[in-house]
Image (cartoon, rainbow, N blue to C red; front, top):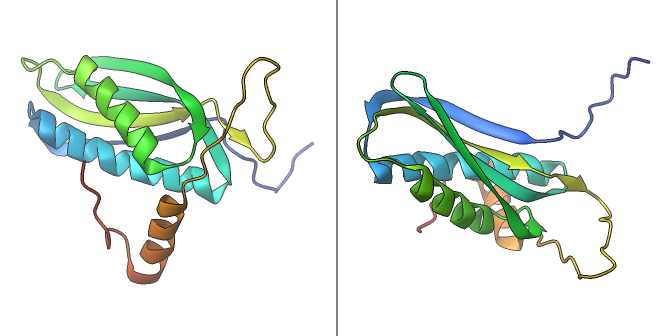
Length: 149
């Protein structure tokens, strides 16, 4: 059966190529932070949470490298995802490679009520600060607020 109703995504990915190739880790991290914000914003629009993050790097010669990690608690907050993505980027990064793009994928998505484990308490983190940033960007435009790391 064909439905015109949009369905929640199973993962959310944001990636873009750079204008110029780079070896600069700070530049890679800056770009990745923008991708994290955009991906988390999409996730919050669906009232969802992610349980894992994958970071990718593509080299000048199109070689693809990726690494992922599960999060301790599902979240839709930029800060938690940004911290995990930064750790992954630093473990994936090689200073002698020249990169053309980076990206992030939010994985293990859940929506609404979450299945609780019998053995451990799962507390999804619905980040109020990130929701506030979303509201301000909707009112005043993208990039009105910058976060430091």
